[in-house]
Length: 259
Image 1 (cartoon, rainbow, N blue to C red):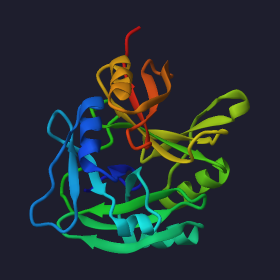
Image 2 (tube, one colour; image 1 turned 135 degrees about the vertical axis):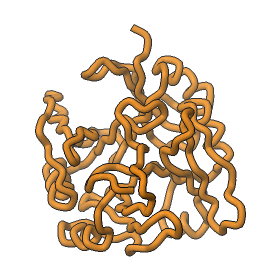
Image 3 (cartoon, one colour; image 1 turned 60 degrees about the horizontal axis):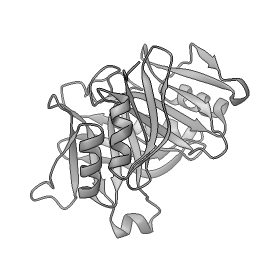
Image 4 (tube, one colour; image 1 turned 30 degrees about the vertical axis):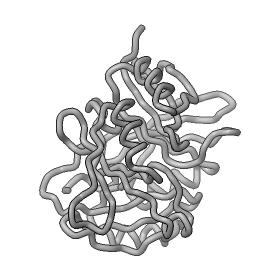
């Protein structure tokens, strides 16, 4: 995956129940979560969008993973040119190590790390000659926006800038909530950072595009999830929701909605 340094290339759901997650997200987002791979010791299933392309994968949590502190959550992979060099940058800039660099047969090389505020993510250099399209501002079923809720916005912004070359060319005031600071990665606006608010969930939040946000919100409730906020309009004309899936994992959805 020769995607530019610092851009998102893959999204991953950790779940205690693949079948329940498939039922939820296939209906709510319109994905097709694949079946268990043959002849593989790891129960890792691909997330396919309606056009047949991939947005990420789903990993079944094992007892060992849970005992080690893993829990249901969404994660993302930041594409880098050299995993080992970026891994050293993560450490030098105050980040932490969750998994040392490792090879993924047929997929590439990756490491599992966290930023100085404790928010986990992967770094990866994919072995595919084709670009990942998991992140696509307008792609149906793709990730549309990456949003970081952090207790120290200035320190977080500096970490990602020093590690991946991100810049922050614009911001939007949210009054007493502080500034919503937009992220530029390799010339693309990929999301924003904000200071976490009381009662909110810390970490990265990912918004996936759906055809109709009101219909998506309805499906969340019908499928055992909870809408936490929205539908509401955001700058640019889209409408969003923030929700929890059937296992309590926070995610976002974005769509044109009904005016």
